[in-house]
Length: 353
Image 1: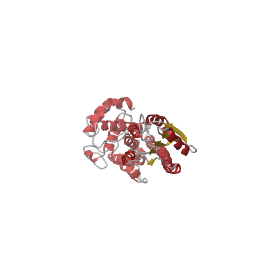
Image 2: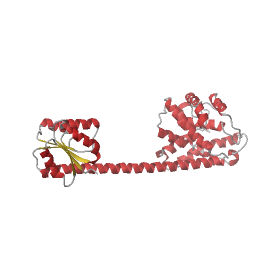
Image 3: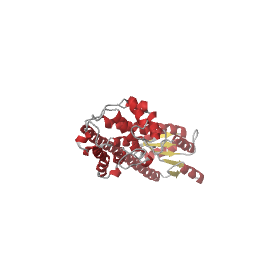
Image 4: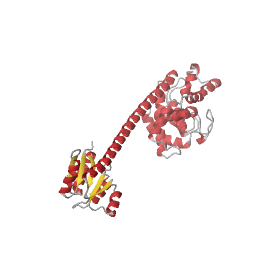
């Protein structure tokens, strides 16, 4: 609560007259020069409602005080009033350049001084209250957004885990894809990879979206999804439909484009089986026709599938899996993406289960 009027004047009588004008409604602090006033402003800044400032004073005059306040970025929220016998054009111009709110010439009529200063103080207090209200509301909104974000993440995890459990897996796969995607995207950003200047928030959104890469498998029959042996040509064609099915499911969600998680998820869902040389599916995208997000998830998906047991194959040792990817045994990937993968291969082996 700002309830102090700071009166800065080297003449005691002037301070006494101004004090008598405001002492019934404000606590009064007095300073004989700018240096004393500056010390008070530094320690009581949040309590001071206004500064009534003389110009000509010993030690530090009024303009020097204003220069110091500006240099220290102090007292920006406190209205300053010059109360001086020298209301020359030069002083008025200099005062307003330093941001004073009004210049009152001595001698003055106490009633009018009180009204002019109180009007400005009330305006400042209203603005401050409004700013605090806005800041509070912004904090509340931010907390709500964070809450909704956590709920959305939980729903995505539950949906992704349900699909993983259906295919007889533990759910570790979707978490690994999330972690691998984050690690790869951060490395690509460090290497200033084209179209990969993502913020930390965007990387988290993409990593969360990656957990839905196989959501379309919910429509794949159990006898194909959990077949212990190699799929027939027809069965493989059915399995391949999961990328399109997942994208169609996400596309039907309300306002998908307004939600960056689901927008990323749509792209990843549809295109995480595309390959750099155009031999992937469903759209046969070649090179950078495919987004870097989908490319990263594609590599992460292959690596994690290789290094974990599946109903149709045993787990492959991590170093061997990395070698297979680099050698192109699992489809062709962006050479720059492979380079980033090699950079963080040891980190992946250490941090990802």
